[in-house]
Length: 228
Image (cartoon, rainbow, N blue to C red; front, side):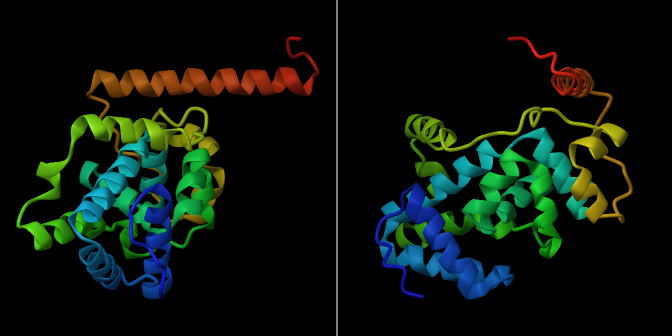
């Protein structure tokens, strides 16, 4: 497919990703090779740009509500490393799926899972191309002040679902992700959060409070009692 891309920015990043997806389908090895070859042809600066944009989108998707969704889709929970690979896999599904998942993780009920919902190699593809071109690592060449500015710029396009920053368990999770949980009946219902960590316990309690508040507001609105 001739996508006419010569420079990688946030728009051409998604365009190149879509070209790779349309060409390679669910073959993640082929998609890795496709992207690496295209980035090599564009030179080290564009390989670095792709690397930085990809990792920024991964960082911006680092939300507990999405992590819960990953565990349901994988049907046996999701480790720290598994969630990194899941976010790369999510990006590989394209712009529309990525933004929809952050606006509502339950939208992933409409996405076909494959490859254990993990795409580890996608995280490295910009680095592979950069190293082939220069003998250096894109990780070492990242300008961190520019990266922070990139995060802020890309985040402006994202609408996060309310409460996505909280982990959930059991019935609370099924209420937050009703369609996704119904779509994956093989999921054992276990989220495997480490409740030994006070930070996790506090976040789960904060999520319960958030959900209760939202439910209370919905009931008030349904009775026409919202504040004017």
